[in-house]
Image 1: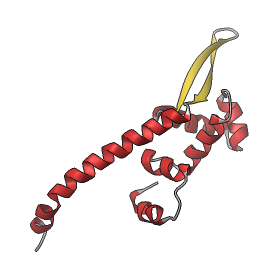
Image 2 (image 1 turned 120 degrees about the vertical axis):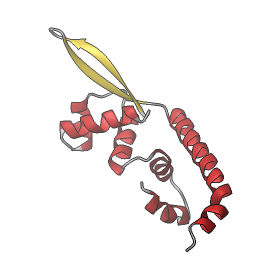
Image 3 (image 1 turned 180 degrees about the vertical axis):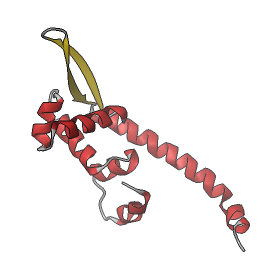
Image 4 (image 1 turned 45 degrees about the horizontal axis):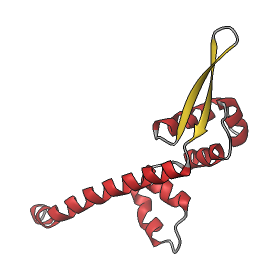
Length: 128
């Protein structure tokens, strides 16, 4: 979700968990969909996630990697056969997501308040 979308989000009569997650964590719709599907599973491989998402395996792999990098999933490596590896992904618990969202909102709040304190000077310095 981009900053351009924030006014329409704030104008909504009712926010959903998906709205808050997309906004606070900067998730794309596909990432949110992947997280929600992953949260309903014990653990999945990229191939299994591709089937759940009805997308290609490389797309599912990319989405899973994005979730891991954003702290919304974990990846476990398991040895298979003759020295190969398979990766299984798990969603972090909703309480962890809640903590991530809270942390990001508090960070934004501190930054916006600091900016607001400088606003009058910045407005006057930008006048022509």
